[in-house]
Length: 182
Image 1: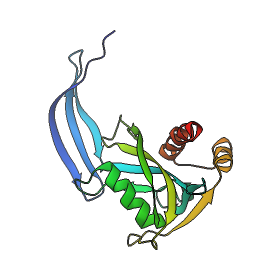
Image 2: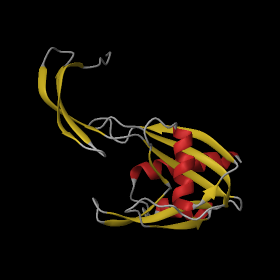
Image 3: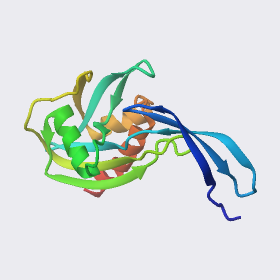
């Protein structure tokens, strides 16, 4: 069976804010049925970093996530600003969040957080040779701790379900595959 795209007949924006936009689309399905209430969340694109220090430790961050009401262990990353490239964004986010600069930076994955309901992408990079070169320069409401872990510790965190953010687990799995190549 051939899977065909839906035809967008109309769109109406319900919410337009800095961090999220909600629109409702009227779409025509391949079988001719028209659905007039398909909701789509528009978010900015994101970047994630699997970042290794010069000593080979994986840099992680721990921060509070209000929507889930959890303190979350995550990989560094964040929102892409304007028209910056994903590679520039990941280096900027790492410097801001961790104060680390890196010798290498390699693109390893592009994922859609939830393609059924949102349109944004997450770009994951693998960076090596990290050295602390600056102090943190966090956003206004950003409070996070920078932590370093061995590869084996991170593998155990994944096995023990200690990393709640699904995109970060996916990024780590891509990153661990890169580490095996070193």
